[in-house]
Image (cartoon, rainbow, N blue to C red):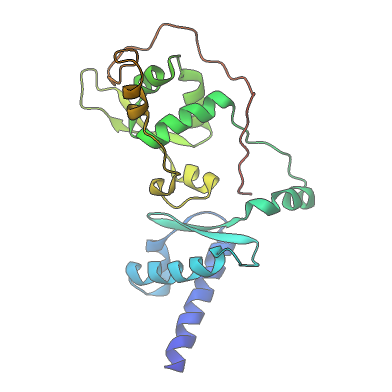
Length: 216
């Protein structure tokens, strides 16, 4: 029994070392290959480790994030100022209010077309969407089975890392945009994803509200 516990501890230590050295998301499949274990067993061990790292009273300065296919170490948000000062990292990665708005529409309704986002917001969101794509927070995830086969977009794994969540289901619960639209005067907002882009004022990137990546 003692030997079994020691073996598990050694394997978890090996996982810890691999994730620390990598500095980026590592696939459970790769860990299982290296450690000679089933993917299911690796996930179970990572879950046990994450529970220790991520508990509220933990004195560690890092979290262990788990995603569908990968896991990664990430520094805790409250220590970001110390890390920046120690490493000489400039502040950056801010998102404008319009980008945050677009990101929220995509995150809570994905996958969505660009026309859907435009319709919900009432403005041309091309600039904000392209900015989010460039930052790796959203990506094209296929095409809609509709006339013209428009591209559909979803959030990325980087989005989960930036916001410190493991899956989309961890997003704060909120009233869906569809429900909000239904509560408005009927017909004012149309949720037809094939609708043409509204021809009203273009979207602009005014940094009125910013979001800063909590993970360093």
